[in-house]
Each structure stands twice: as C-alpha cells, then as structure tokens.
Length: 157
Image 1 (tube, helix red, strand yellow):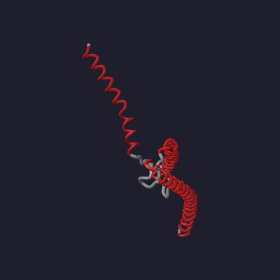
Image 2: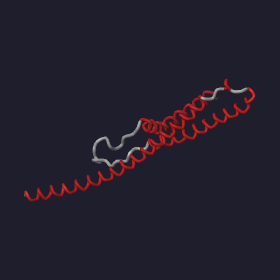
Image 3: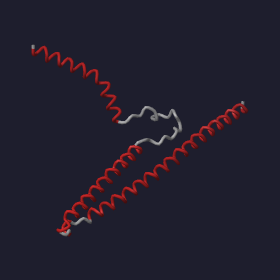
C-alpha cells in the first residue's frame, strides 16, 4: 500500500513538474515579447516627445513683431509653412500614438495557473454587460414601441 502511494505521488510530481515547466516556459516567452514591444513603444514615445519639443520650440520662436515690413510676405509664408509642418507632424504622431494605445489594450496572454480557479472564467467588463442588457431588452423595447404605435393609431382614428 505504501508503495502504491509512493508511486502515485511520484507520478503526481512528474505531471505537476511537466505542467508547470511548460507553463513557465511559455510565460517567459510571452514576457520577453512584451518587454521587447514595450521597449519599442517607449522608443516611439521618446521620439514623439522630442519631435513635439522641437516643433514647439520653433513655433515659440516665431516673432511677427520682429519681422521686417519689406519681407513680410516671405516671413509670413515661412511661418505658415512651419505651422503646417508642425500640424502634419502632430497628426502623424497622434495616429502612431493611437495605434500604440490600441495595441496596449490587448491583454498579456499568460497561461492560467489553475484553469478551474473561481473568477477566472466568464468575467466581463461593464461595457459588455451593458451591451448584453441592451440585446436582452431589445425584444421588449420593440414590442413596447409596436404597442405604442398601435395605441397611437387607434386613438387617432
């Protein structure tokens, strides 16, 4: 009997060790990828911050009061071009930042430590519950609107 118990516990050890080795290995790969992507995002944010700072410095350096009246058209064209460049850069970087934010909303897909732990399945966000509630209420809303239209039509006639 003790031999059976010992054998069973050794099998349990091997299964548990193999399971956790696999999960930890996969998790390390996921974490390495996330670290790399986070570093890349940080570099993009730094480049964007530097670019915005340069454009801001140039825009703050525009001084229409110091322009020579004889060169007014040329200075004004140059200043407008600078503003357009800053606007284009802002727009481009804003799109990139929105793309980063969209990527960030994805969850890190680490394997679950114990798949049957309470609370790990079926969790929904508030927005998802609102949509579910709306979908479940839609037939009732439709019947109510039809009844209201029939009542209105009968009251009119």
